[in-house]
Image (cartoon, rainbow over all chains, first blue to last red; front, side, top):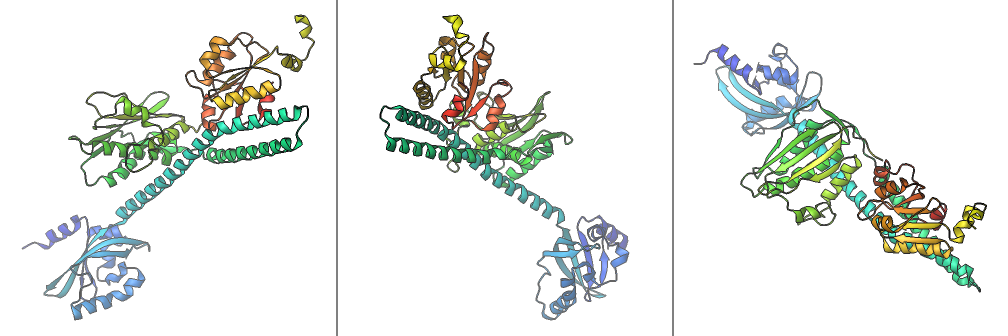
Length: 368
Length: 130
């Protein structure tokens, strides 16, 4: 036989909220975890109807739910459990995972509810979702930027040559002893069209160049943790170990966190892929600092990258993956350089995995 | 004859062939187009595909103009500009670039006082400097 004081101590030790009600919905037991969850003290709610703890829409129906169950035995929550919404003393709604059991006692039919506060979990999920969607948007924008810049640069050369050839030819046509007016008019029209093409390229370039990094003070350690968390989500099945050794949570750096995150997630994800079939599956993110720079290193226990592989690594459209364009590293490097830093791969060492180093200047400012 | 030149305007000397325009540009077509353009204006023009050959073969003088593409194989355009600007009686130097702005900006510390012309360019963009 368990003493009543022992029972109370058990109730108050429980991490989850525990509520016991009678068949009228009156609260008989309300433990300490509930006090934290709902903001009401035990003395405020014991003896009251449990619907005090519910948003009004549900509260109105709750007594009826109990009666329905007692009459029909048709369980909606008893023995099943579900996600429900509770109401805090201050009126805010709380997501709760609720499981309900029942007991026949001397004093009548009683229901026991165990409540798990989902606020932290929800917030965490929401944060991760926002991080992920930012990252996807950024990746798209950057891929477009990179394409735009590449096209602008590649087309610039022939366009410059074309324009100068046309202008020179037009001048020569004018200087001829018997100028051919029709020819001169055609040449002038061609020059105008070449100019138009040039303006399109310039507009495209201006658009890309407007998007300078948004640099704000960011906690580097938290940023790295977030990146590892994002990658872990995709690696739940294989037992790859993702570790950060940087724990200086006060250390702040001026950078565009979404863009830098994109680089790190890209590096960590690649590293995770590289170690998937290795006996030791480990990805370590470490940080080194000197006076002018911060070096964020991503090291894996994969097979490493030989010189041949390294030479193609940062070129667009040379990826070895079945999916993707192979522009991830090219873009990552551009972003790093846009921050005044760089992205490098450490030289190959027999029997060691690959290490990528992201260098960021300490006073990381956008160069544009 | 030489002392007479002092009274002739620089533009006139340019067309007389006493002033040389140098082009250092790795893209064959751009290099050729620029050279054709200057030659059609009776300007003396010598073109190079990279910085190394320019340094070994050209001897630019103070009245000459050197157009340097920032994006060169081997010796970088900005390093070439730095070397040429350090010459006694350095010629006028103009940088040309088809690169995005941030890449150009990165080179700026080295080429501080050099004007930069961005591609795509028209003949007037180059003629402004000769």
